Amino acid sequence: MSIDVTDATFPIEVVERSSTVPVVVDLWAEWCGPCKTLGPILEKVIDETQGKVVLAKVDVDSNRQTAQAFQVQGIPAVYALRDGKIVDGFVGAQPEAAVREFVAGLLPTEAEDTIGKLLAQGDEASLRQVLEQDAGHPGAVVALAELLVGRGDDAATAEALALLERIPESAETRRVAALARVGTSVAGDEVTAELDGLLERVKDDDEARQRYLDLLEVLGPDDERTATYRKSLTSRLF
Image (cartoon, rainbow, N blue to C red; front, side, top):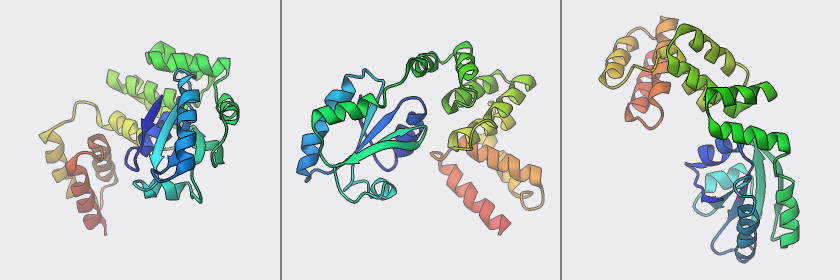
């Protein structure tokens, strides 16, 4: 499987995706001859894994932020990520045999393969089976917590928040935790009205400030109101 990734999509397509499947990042450019030699080899070998490894192609000329994050000194540069961390990599064109050895080192063990299938099912029973094998699996923790929050009862919500404490904070854990505290029924104009009311209290009321931040997490970064209300919060606090 091969996908084209940009600076904007990198956090989701690479970092978050790597919590469920190894992601190979191919940093390349149109003018780079060795890149054009290596690229088809990577695609062929990774396609043969039938989805057990994902190839993310990043044009460094168009996505300088990602290139800088990897501190790229030369291309092609290839890095493998698992759970958001670099686990292997190489620089320069490589023969097919070397690429096969590199990719083989990323293939999941039998236990990891089982976990991957359970994650793909995504139901509560499957996710709990994953956590029986790996109590701190980020993908399973977030997915199960979100399912529990969707129930809407106090016991499930408390369990969801406890689950999220098992793993490091991320954009996804903040979003699901906010849903747990705020509830899933708040939407539309109700959010705007509540944010306006809370804004008057955020400076001196800790609970109001937390509620305000949770509502912004629920709205998400793509909602145009989020940036506006974050600026308003900053002006009130400072």
